Image (cartoon, rainbow, N blue to C red; front, top):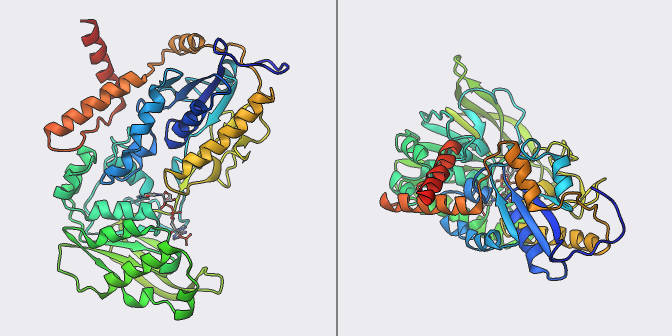
Length: 464
Ligand code: NAP
């Protein structure tokens, strides 16, 4: 890279941007770059996986198909001739930081938050205890988790946390196989869940119903499950008139209405129950003596004047053999890129990476794991505005080898099998066709080697 005076980007020498991560934030950032007409751009969107869309494919619940329809717009963005998708390229190895700097005038890091937070209580590493993130990755057929052996022999499962992810995993555990067949859940998970003996799922909030993070639409779904009754203890959702009068958030008001409705219901005697519990904190995951979860000890809480949970010294043991902690995602650093370990984000000012020029960040790795998919559109637009302002001001370091061909040569020399957008579209069509044949919306190809084999077959067919 060289530093020089103001560079005017032209159609012959467009502004070259590398977007690292093809989840919603990466695609929204790309879309924002395409929407403006002041500066000609060329964008390469990288992903370490062959498939694009990040959490839309591997995080959104498999039964929330309408949320996934956002990919229609993503498809348009990634099909634009100014954009290339380069899947199966790992940042840090296949494309190092220095190499990226050599080929691009600007880099936007949009890698999301792939790890999870821990509870910090004894027993967290027992067999049967894991993060919801791992469980979600497994049932959504994420290549890193697909080969994982998941023993689903628990009759009781505790899900710690009351955000939407906690509701997602609880609902998937509670649904009947007929309900799950309508989703795009990975086949291995469908088979395993079909045999699951689970009877009781406990969803555990450490604070009260007014502090729960889930949204009403997701909560309501528990009242409509074919094979599971929602169970709520009226005492745990009791809220004084004064507290209720202070609630201004409509979601919180509606959540309370739904919880009261659940608390007033007589369970219909469905085979499964989802207990929505409040004011309880896990304090220890119990060992059966063989290294496996045999129970979860929880302490009852009260709320202090600031709405924080305070233990009361009263304990109870839940009869569970599986514990899923769903207490938030956490970002992971990228080689060569500044990282705030504490917060799990790339340190930045309004999307500009601290201490760097020509480097930006958007989405969960910029601000932490909060908000819905759409939240990331504005977030990405804001970041791209900073990038464009820097480009206009001539403040970007210029790439020394600014061409697509140079990137292709580099990756070829390294033996990287780049998965293009056309490769993905062929895989997508294949998954949908396979799914349709089974009466399902999609049959996901889960292993990376199978995705690459599919590409090989397509190439051979095209040649022959
Ligand atoms: P979240 O909404 O931040 O919820 C995390 C939950 O964990 C909170 O209830 C939190 O309680 C609890 N928690 C944290 N530390 C804890 C501890 N030590 N012990 C007990 N509980 C603890 O996170 P998320 O569920 O992972 O969701 C991430 C984001 O994705 C959210 O913005 C969510 O809305 C979004 N999402 C949306 C959908 C959808 O739209 N359908 C689906 C999935 C995810 P406190 O409040 O007490 O800290």
